[in-house]
Image 1 (cartoon, one colour):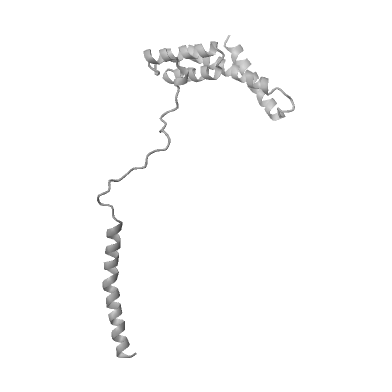
Image 2 (cartoon, helix red, strand yellow):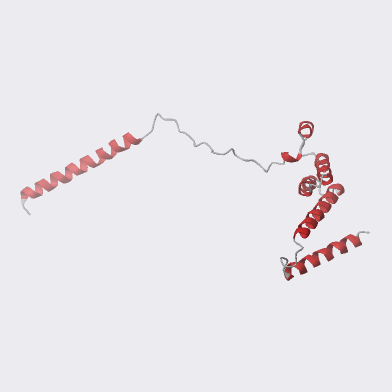
Length: 154
């Protein structure tokens, strides 16, 4: 290798060695955000907490009672059962049972609401062409079990 080329090669390597960190430092200094405050992204949709049960309350009920009051849940369950809103009655009765699972009145409303919901589902599903044999046998066993339990409780 020629000495001229060797000297040029060493000079180029030295120049590259000096310029690389300098360019790197300049590049990093232009992209830093020292004075800008960090901005957190804002949620697009309002954050949800636990599922809302407020639709079950009347406006005057929410003002005067706590939603964790067992008597309130039983009263809501009764009112919804009498209004034939069985799913709402079941949910309110379940809330009462979550507070006290020995509450007989809440358990009765839950049971009756579930039976009424099952009755309306069966009524809509009564067409033999739609119901498979496996579903029919499961349904018959369930009805037999319910009937047995009701007769045994008398």
